Amino acid sequence: MAIKINKTGVEAMQKTAPAFIDAVKWENDRLIILEQTKLPLETSYEELTNVHQVWDAIYHLKVRGAPAIGIAAGYGLYLSVMNFETEDFNQFWNEFQKHSDYLASSRPTAVNLFGTLERMKRLVLAAQGKTVSQTKQLILEEAHRVKTENCDICQGIAEYGLQFIKDGMGILTHCNAGSIATASRYGTALGPIYLAHEKGMKIKVYADETRPLNQGSRLTSWELQEAGIDVTLICDNMAAMVMAEGKVQAVFVGCDRVARNGDFANKIGTYGVAILAKEHHIPFYVAAPSSTIDMATASGKEITIEQRKAEEITCGYGKRTAPEGIKVYNPAFDVTPARYVTAIITEKGNLYPPYETGLTKLFG
Ligand code: MRU
Image (tube, rainbow, N blue to C red; front, side, top):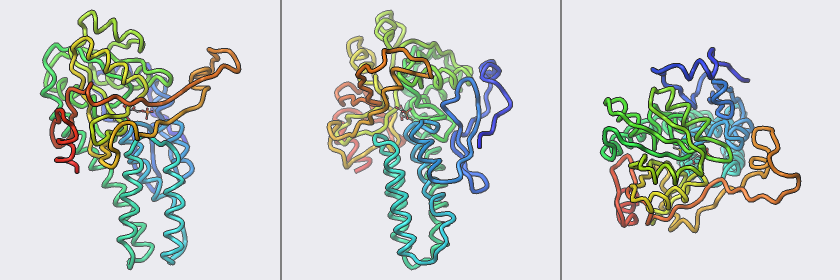
């Protein structure tokens, strides 16, 4: 069920001192998500009451961004067993595993999804000997924990990343790694920017539009404008020019999975931005919460890249912009090799090359 917040996108854009919009929250046995496909025209929430709705919300990017997907999956798993009436632990376990596999099939790239499912699995296995009702309660508590931990993590990233920002800087970002991609006020890649703004620094952000689903124009430019931060929207193919004109002194991006060697997957187009940054001698920073670091994956070559429907490119937002029957390639993410990354910002500190050493020390 959709719940509309009492303001239009236009009214929202005129605000300068926003309240924190919690993109994923749990209320009265329901998962309430900010419906991100409706932004910026409409700020509305949707109530999810079963695991199928959660799968659908993740697949259709109503809830999106690696941390938010991981949080939604925890609550989705609880919803999947919440009304299951059995005290037989084996039956419960089978049901739990079936729904966990189902949620895992929603989107393949963000490791946060799999991290949460794995964490829940370990919790349920360790709960053997407890009643099914007690185990369900543990799952809900763990889902809350995934969410609150994310808030602390984003705060840590904002604080560590702040040292890379100087007053008056121009910063380019790609996709949306802000507040609404997480469940925190700061988000990941936008965290240091929000903090710099809070400290009174004047920052000028360039937000890539981020084709084909426009997370940059619909979401990043919206949330930064809401926060009163100076943000300028550019098409993806303008980044080179903006850099050449000397308008950008740093790039900050988020990520969906960081491999052990520091290669990382993020929204399609990130790799191109990294190459451009290197060419223009601009530092390129990746904000990576520990939940997005995948030490089991040796390098970017092993990361599964989500392929999405052709219509997202040929018929974006309902209007056909390509001939019927055209062949389309639509990977949702690309992998940026570690050699393009100036530093990885984590909640435990900033890492510099060689990344495998630092990542293993902090997260191994
Ligand atoms: O397809 P999306 O919108 O889920 O892609 C999101 C991104 O690529 C983000 O940059 C990434 O998940 C980091 S969010 C803190």
